[in-house]
Structures are given as structure tokens and as C-alpha cells.
Length: 302
Ligand SMILES: Cc1cc2nc3c(=O)[nH]c(=O)nc-3n(C[C@H](O)[C@H](O)[C@H](O)COP(=O)(O)OP(=O)(O)OC[C@H]3O[C@@H](n4cnc5c(N)ncnc54)[C@H](O)[C@@H]3O)c2cc1C
Image 1 (tube, helix red, strand yellow):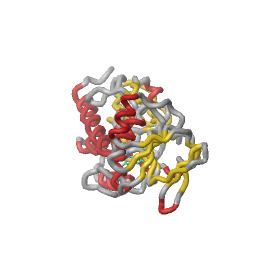
Image 2 (cartoon, helix red, strand yellow; image 1 turned 90 degrees about the horizontal axis):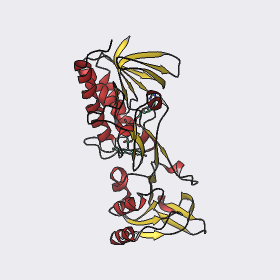
Image 3 (cartoon, rainbow, N blue to C red; image 1 turned 30 degrees about the vertical axis):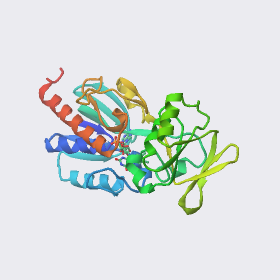
Image 4 (cartoon, protein in one colour; image 1 turned 90 degrees about the vertical axis):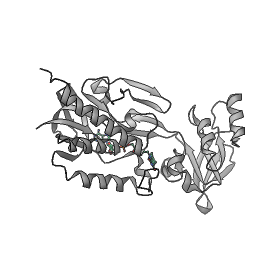
């Protein structure tokens, strides 16, 4: 069946959009491969009325509620490639099957690339974190590390200092400029020079950060600024314009979350610089409104 819309990605942005479109009685299929960005964390925070639920639990609730909307189809699978133009897009899934729709919504999120330091990946979302607003409260103060990995790391250290006593591991990056050093001093951030060569478990649930010199420091959590990568090749298949953000490349969108390609919308982390569950959900709503109104008010192409 030729759908009104296909949503690629059934995370917070994609399901929010499906909810709005389903309530507008539009035929929409959500394709989801089941790997939301925060799957590494046992609990999610900063989401009103959902404090401490896991991301997976919030998404399960959303899917259960969406099941009541007869025009919404939730499909488990991976969208492989996209082709076509407004009013006639087609999506091929990795299973080989194809779907077509008048509009597309890209909500497939991003992938976090961490620095290649032994011990980091295994602790991602547990004691290695990126967002103090999501997980800073649970640390409960005390020693916290920030690993310099990109130009915003000093700023991240100055912010995280509101949650504990921060050491910024410069990790071989250039020394901060004087203005930044002054900021770090005002925020009581200690600088630790030298390359980090490993992190691992220390007593009392802490984490050790080991420098190449052999020196180790124990912290309760280590913050890192990951490099964000758009997942898959569909954005490139379609030719959507991208823009640089401090955290990596994202899809450029209008205030209604339309991309540079007519009929293609984008929402969530894939189309905003600093995302979280609430902001991605809100993006999904904005994109769904824009997409729905384009179905109503833009004359179908011959
Ligand atoms: C470790 C960690 C902890 C976090 N904790 C919090 C927190 O406590 N509170 C908070 O507000 N935010 C938190 N965040 C941020 C939050 O996870 C993201 O902002 C949010 O998940 C973005 O939602 P999204 O819908 O854009 O993308 P996602 O939630 O990542 O969903 C994208 C979906 O698209 C699917 N997908 C990808 N490619 C395809 C494809 N080709 N075909 C089909 N499906 C595809 C994926 O499987 C996934 O299910 C955390 C992030 C991380 C990394």
C-alpha cells in the first residue's frame, strides 16, 4: 500500500511523530531496528513524569499505546536505502521488501563514537557519560573526570563542575587558551596533563583513569564528548543538506523540520545539535505537524 508517510527510526522522535500522524488518521509505517541511542543506560532522567524509567520502557509504553491507532504500522527491521521524490518515495529494507509513501521522516538518530581508549566503551552509559543533566544528579558529588576529546571539552568540564569536583584530563589536546584557563579556575576545575591510556574499575564502584606515565586517579564518573555520526546511508541517498554542529554533522532543517529535499522531514538527534528524549519527542511532533500540513496543502506532483 502507498502510505502517507514512512518514518525511518522508531525511537523518541519517530514514535512521537507516528502518534501525531496516527491521530490525524494518516497511514504511516514506522521502520525500527531497535537500537535507540541510550540503550547503554539502565535509567533515563530529565523526562517529566518518567523519572528513572529506562529508555526501553518508555519506548515500550509508547508502542503499546500506538497499537490502538489502526492507521499506524510498526515494523521491526532496517531501512537500507531510499529513492524517489515527493509523493513517490520508496524504501528498501534489509529483508529485501519495499515500501512506498508520499512523505518520509528521518528519525534514525545518531551513533556515538568514543575515543579509542581501553575500558571506555564497556562503561558507556554506566560510569562513562556525556550528559550531566541526564545522569549528573545520581553521581552524588565527589571526584568527577572529564576527558578532553573535542574543542567543547573545556566548556563541558566547566558545566560538569556544578555536579562535583572536576578534573579535566587534557589527554594530549592543545593547552587551553588563557580565557578558558581563567574560566576553569573560576569553576574550580583541576587540569591533568598527559595522555590517558586506560580506564577501569576501582574500589567502591569508582573508576580509575590511568595516564601513560602510570599515574592513576579515581573518579566516580568520567564525562566524554562523543563524536556523533549519522547512521546509515539513507540521508546521503536522498541528498539532504547537512550542517556542522559542535557535536558533529546533522541534517539541516527548517523550523517545521523539513529538510532540503521536498517531502523529506527529519527529527530528533539526527537533526539537532544537543538532543535528549524530550527534545527529540518535541521534534517528532513538530515534524509530524509540518509533514501532515504538507500532505493537506501541497498539491500532489503529477
Ligand atoms: C548513554 C546515553 C544515555 C542517555 N540518557 C538520557 C537520559 O537519561 N535522558 C534523556 O533525555 N536523554 C538521554 N540520552 C539522549 C537520548 O538517548 C537521545 O537524545 C534520544 O535517544 C534521541 O532520540 P531519537 O528518536 O532521535 O533517536 P534514537 O532514540 O536513537 O532512536 C533512533 C531509532 O532509529 C532506529 N534506526 C536507526 N537506523 C535505522 C534504519 N536504517 N532503519 C530502521 N531503524 C533505524 C534505531 O534502531 C533507533 O531505535 C542519552 C544518550 C546516551 C548516549
